[in-house]
Amino acid sequence: NALDREMWASLEQVLELLEADLPRALVVTGAGTKAFSAGMDVNPDNPQVARLVGAVAARDVGPARAMLDELHGVLDRLFALPVPLIAAIGGLAYGGGAELAARCDLRVADPAAILCFSEVRLGLMPDLGGGVALTRLVGPGRAADLILTARKVDAAEALRLGLVNRVSDPGASVDAAVALGEQIAGNGPRAVRAALAVIRRGADLPWRDAVAAEVDAAAHLIASGECEAGIAALFGKTAPDFVDPT
Image (cartoon, rainbow, N blue to C red; front, side, top):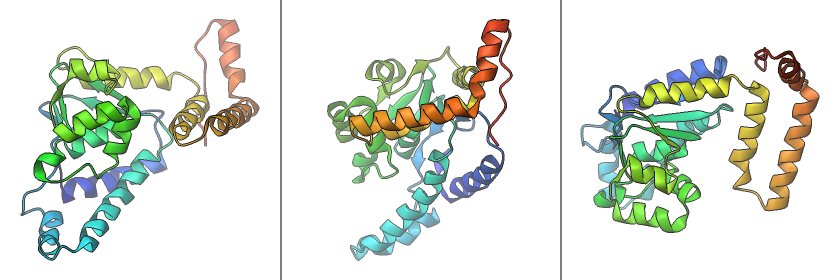
């Protein structure tokens, strides 16, 4: 589950499918149970690394910037999806893998999961947006502790820190993440998208601007009529039949 060229190409293909037919929530996980993701593949055989060797020797920032811009072009599409992204962390999440988990909206960890922002051990630093995401999740002091020491964090500590939202039963992180996604999917899809958009934007805005964005989103949501199905179901004591946004 390393972040290599093949993985990035596969992610782009998946994104095309998702953008054409959005689910109400999305679970992000690794293949198998041993690792969510071991992070960037730094093996010299990785073409993304090989093309940087000469640039490092020449102390040339250009190729590194170009590679990171390329990767962020893919990640921007993933994290711009207007539905909740739920990371199911079933094993190790190191380096870039920990960063991707931190950037998701919600995180469910297996009790045996280990997260580690390990980049500084290699003379590198978080560069996929995970350092910023971690700081917003746990605060600058705790983020500095995790990033600057590159220490390993187990699921129990991650939960205490606020780095993960839930710890599943052993071996059940994906099942728990799917169950969480299904719980979210049972709510009004327009309501979920609108609330999520405000949550994502709120950290970037001053208080008054954030509240104004919330009020504006709420007014448009009310006017969409989605609440008719929700309120009718409440009084009729039935499950609401929400229609997906077009």
